[in-house]
Structure formats: structure tokens, C-alpha cells
Image 1 (tube, each protein chain N blue to C red):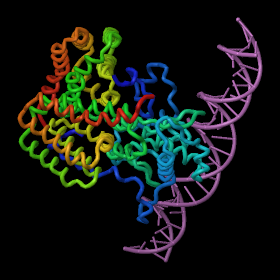
Image 2 (image 1 turned 60 degrees about the vertical axis):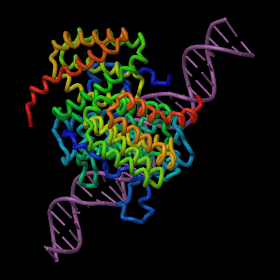
Image 3 (image 1 turned 120 degrees about the vertical axis):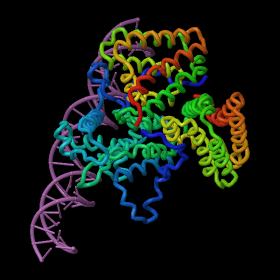
Length: 256
Length: 256
DNA sequence: TCTTTCAATTGTTGGACAAATAAAAGATAG
DNA sequence: CTATCTTTTATTTGTCCAACAATTGAAAGA
């Protein structure tokens, strides 16, 4: 995911419709493993029993007996469901249905530790601008004095930061806390997933000294506009703040 | 207004989201399970050895020995990586690195047995509002006559849609094409990942008849405001369009 | 070159024990 | 006797081990 697509249409090779309807067709469907079959069974069990978020699944032992499977097989199937974010398992209490699939979907991309290209930088900063600047209405509606206090607290930690990595960690925490003010879990999830990329961008653009001086005061100014409910000033300050790193990239990567 | 997640700070004790920077801080790390630790280890192994798509991972036995873990623990860790679409395992040949994460993201939502919760609905529509309404500046800057023509084309397909599923597919294509106008790949990717949820929301709120009448004309009106570069009208129309499904959800779940 | 055999690896099962914890039983204070 | 806190118990999940089946790439043989 590096190059910008030419206004891509859609086309996602229809990966969604892969469930069931495989083995009954008598096809050469590569013979699903016991674990995969078990996942299918549990899925139909959820569907047929009308289980909903908050309900409990049978215990491992019961699943073993009901579907004639070994316990480790059941455990691997449950591991898949856990990874999907549809169940939460705790010792003694068992498996409870949840729905955190959105968060897990974005988790998939936590592996990215590749080099940040200029295109990616532009995209990510554009995204952040949308999340942190354009959302000012929701932000101003929801922000509480407690939020402001928290943000000041986080920002003050800059003064104790020793390394650039520490500082960028605090920088990210500041912006994450700001996004959290909106109270939208989906947006917060997306923001958290972008952490590795955002951190790289922060690190690339700044040294530890820049953090404890420029970044710190810029954050403080942003907080002040937020506190005053000054929409115009907030948008201006935040936009400038996000665009600051632009130079480093434009000079760093001339062309390709 | 809506029951937002209680200003979650950070920390979502998920499986793989426990990225590094955890154990060195000596915090109250809730003691990650052996499987989660192993996933982390394997990830750093991939990273440090510079493994890429097509390369092989060590065998189960080697992983057992190297990380002092039981074989079932290793298997559950590998099961997570398989579910994430990061490795493909075949008997005898072992685990090979792949990258099918995007496809897996869609698989997550093949679990259509679960209802979309009201919280998710509110969050997602809020997110879409940000992406499709608040981004109007970028949108108006980038939109070309070709884009408009494409959007008209997609919208016209409503008239040929036979089932509600077909129609919601077209509906999603329309909005995806609109988001693509911004030319931001990161945003487009996120939007595509959300496809299954968005589709479900679309389906829940509408019947096939609604699609071919109300939705079609609402889209047409939106396109018209876009063509006229009427910012105010665009925001109003699009916001109303997105908020339309709200009623269906509010009456569905009375309280809790 | 083809076939057969072999060996290594993953897939599945069952059992054992440790860790966690909700529920039940008991103890204590009022 | 009641209520609250503490302890015990029983159940469930977490981890590990051992064994065997299934798969299949690789070597041996025809």
C-alpha cells in the first residue's frame, strides 16, 4: 500500500461470500480441516440458537462432546473466534459473545513497519487533518473540562521526555486523547491502528529538542483555542501543526 | 447524546495489539498469556530477520525450542497469524509468509450471525459523516467531470437492481467512488474495510424499493450539489442522507 | 523418467496439571 | 437472626506432553 491508485473503482474479488456452501456441493473443496468445520458449526450454533452479544457459548468440554472433537481442536477454533473479535474468553466464566470485529479488522494492519513513502505521508496527514481538524464541531460539542485537564497533563510530560522515541510516544498520546474526545470508537480504533505510521512520521520530522519546545507550545496553543471554544483559531492552529512536518518530507524525498 | 465508550484512555488488552513498549515500562500489564507473548516474539522475529512474503518461518518444533513453549501454544499462536492472513501453513512444507490481510478483514464480517449493535451504527455513521460530509473541501477541490460522470453511471445502476443485496452493493459502490475522489488511499482503504458493516447498515435501513426510489434520487441530488459546487447544499443533503437510517435503529432498541 | 519408499512436518486427539475465579460455605460482627 | 467479610471448593480455561494419523517433499529404486 504505497502507490496511489488511479481513482480505483471497487473490485475486491468478492472475498465475502466464501462461507459455507462448499462441501455440500460435492466439490473438490480441499477438504476443510476439523478446526474450520468446528468454526462453521459454532457459527451455525450461534445463528440457530439466536445468540446475541453478551450471551455465553457452551464450555470447551460441551463443545468437544457435541461436535466429537478433541479439546485442542476446540481451542484452536475458539482462538479463531477470539482473533475475529466475536468472543471473549475468561477462565472459569467461559466464552461470551462480543463484537469487536471492527477493531480487529484494523488490527490486521498493525504489522506494517515499512518505510514511510511521501505518498503515504501525504495520505496519513490528510487523514489526520480530517480526524482532528474537520471534526471540530463534534470535538467542541463533546469536550469537557476533564478532557482539557487530561490533555494538559499529557502535554506536560514532554518536559520529562529524554529520547525522541519517548517524546513521539507522548505526542501520539496527546493526539489520541484528543481524538478520544469525539467518543467515536470506530474512529479511535482507526487512529490507534495508524500508530506505527504516525509515530514514524513524528520521529522523522522532529528531534527531541523540537518536541520539548515547538511541539509542546503548539499543543498548548491548540488546547487554549479548544478551551476558548474558538473554532477558527483551533482549525488554523491544528492545521498548521499537522502541516509542519511537510517540509521535512518534501526536501527529504525529492522525487522517485 | 449517545452512549459513548467511556473515554477510553488506551489499553485494549486485545490479542496482538500488545505491541512492544510494554514490558520494559514495568507497568500493570495484566500478564499477557503465553500465546500472546509468542505472537509478539514471532512478529519481532519476522521483523528482525527481515522476512518477507514468500519466506518460511521456522517449524513448530524449532519455535517450541527457541521460545520454550509447548507445541499447542505454538499452534495457537500460529492459528492467530493464520487468521490474520499473515502466514499460510501446509503440512510438511511449513509456514510461509503471505499477505492476505485485506481479504481476511472482509472475512471477519462474514460472521453475519451477529447483529450490528446500535453503538456500532452510531459510530460508523459518525465516521462516514466525517469522511463524506466534513471532507467537502478536499472533495470540491479534487472532483472532476469524469468523477461526476462515473458517479451518475453508478447511481443509474440502481434502476436495474433486482434484490436488496444488489442494491446495497451499488449503494456502497456509489459512496466508495465518492470517497475515492479525495484521492487519499489510506482513507479509501479504511472505507473498504468497513464495507461489510456499512452494507449491513444499508440493508437494515432499506428495502429494494426504497433503494430504487428514495436512495436513487437522494444520490442524484447530492451529485447535483457537487456539480454546482454548492458547499452548503452538499453538506445538508449528504448529512440528511446518512442520518436517514437512524430511525430504524432507534426504534429497534428501546433501552437497556 | 517414472514409481515407490521414506522421512519430516503438520493435524488431531487424549490426558495431566497449573492458574484463575465464580459460587458456595463458613466465620465474624452487629 | 441478619449482614458482611473471608475461606474454601468446584468448575473452567491455560499450558504442556505424548502419541498417532494425514500429508507431502525428497530420496531411493526400477
